[in-house]
Image (cartoon, rainbow over all chains, first blue to last red; front, side, top):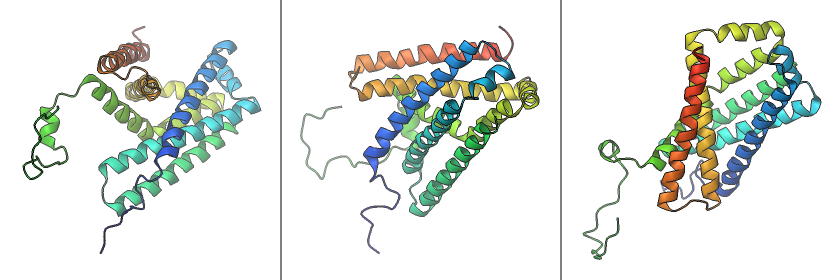
Length: 117
Length: 139
């Protein structure tokens, strides 16, 4: 059997994910600062103050986008780890699929939490 | 690092992957420590993602679940996990900002890269210690 020139889980989609990793990092940084400022401006550090931060609809949507950014960011980073240490194509593919499914599950969970407030 | 005398291809040392013995023998420079801890902290946060979401859910669902979260935060094991999560976030953010600057070609030379690696630890470690003091009720 000939050796594949391109593994199905190889790094042939480098630049887009590289840049997405950096942009999602900045999105998360800005969002964390925003939450911190909103909480400090509210001045209440109990349940009322905390849930008030996430009550407005724009904040819910922004928070959902931030969780999405976190999932994309985590995907790129974890994928890099699998690519560095797991060399068996089948095992790596299984880990990639499991990571994607798990991160999408976590994103859906975060949406469910946000709209329960 | 440089090899001034050209060697014939046959005599050239074979290129191979790093082995466990090398890992112990090499002294990793400080920027290397920042880098590997960036990976370790990122993986740790990925593994703790369900824990984080669970905390987020408890914090927002209702005032009674918020109270349960506060009660959970009294446990010493819970505090250790929160401290690990806090350190991971602090290191990952500081090291990540440094990598973003390096991407912008800021501080690429060796001296500057070493200095910025020091700054990452000088910021993240005291903040993590402060978090530890807050979590374990010393402050």
